[in-house]
Image 1 (cartoon, rainbow, N blue to C red):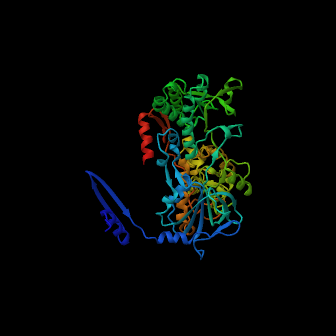
Image 2 (image 1 turned 90 degrees about the vertical axis):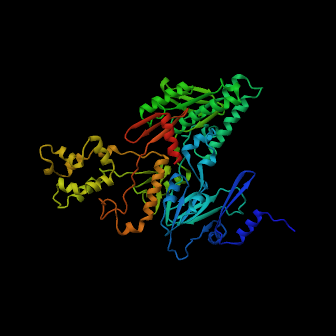
Length: 570
């Protein structure tokens, strides 16, 4: 007779009873314990997904709609980075059929990429599968692992190509129709067309980049350990150059320094005195987007740690053996330095599909897609762009000054009183955020105070200005306009904002909640996007971090490192 173990009995009982949706089994073996937990789900969900899969056609496949009656609006999301994932996580309106298209089937926590390069953090710790993110949502979401290579705005289609290496029998390309398109494909590394950068430098934007850097670092130490290598060649092989003194470049240089001095010198003791780390920055200081106190502390710390910081050094060429720099401070002289590994971290560039799309919609020669304050691509009501691939083209007050005046002048008298202006003041500040920034700089409580200054001989309540005087009073307001930085923080907030707009689309169509339309009638459906800055961090190695927080607060040292840990552990 076949001997059946207790585990097999439990297993058969569980498989034979679908009603046992949850089971907890506790085993004790030799004083130890083993806990097994199972959560069974019916197969109908998988069957439902399978039934909607596209069937192959000749030529380019067309992904059919999941709703035959067409009641659900189809939303196509391109990208699974900070912006796209934030949009998916916050979308709750089940009246949409959502199609997610991205060559990357996971979300990566990019601020920790420098830590992956040196093994401080493992890659699996900073990724989350997209299917895992969307499977619990009430919204109908489908994911396709492919890359969009063309956007057809006229016909509301996107054309995609699978990036899978397996043989798909010529069915690699397909097209997807959309009602709304959300473009969140991010950006690529910007080489500024400098010769040799793309061929000889590492980048640090993806998980694969970090893993390649980690392998190359180890390879450099292994090569330097070979007995046939001279000391001069060892110095060259163990010279690590980081190009770009921004947060990513600075953090990677710090991580690499700690990795070498705390781990690798124990494995390769003869290499300790031969390793050199150089940080190249084209401007006068590293971390120039931070407070000057942070910049000074970082430069001093790197000097103490032995990291060679060269500012005013503009890279002009990279070969497989040398990096050529133009020294801005020394009359533009060209210098060359041998290296073993180079990491390029100097800004972002536009992806080809976005460049082609911008030409199609009349936005050539731009760094990124131009959108309005509601993240809609300019010239389109159904296409939205967010994250690093887009920039908000904030409307200027001076462009609408006549419309603002007419809207406020309700009695059509040709002059504007303080009371009339006060009635539209909130709408002006909400529609044009630069107004609030200008008032803060001038230490004014409201725009009425600016009008009062232009009429210094009268009391505040009696202020009355014509169009010319009104224009003069607001002439400097647009000087406070600033583009948002291309950061994860901005992209995540944009994704959350846009999802909230989609969640309340029908409600706000009937009851608009945005500011007045100064160049039209009624109100905008939604309030415009407003970025809220929560601060920025720059890990500097040695368990020390620099933090610049809202309110011009600066924190530097070990306590800031724990603040950094707490932010990214939450």
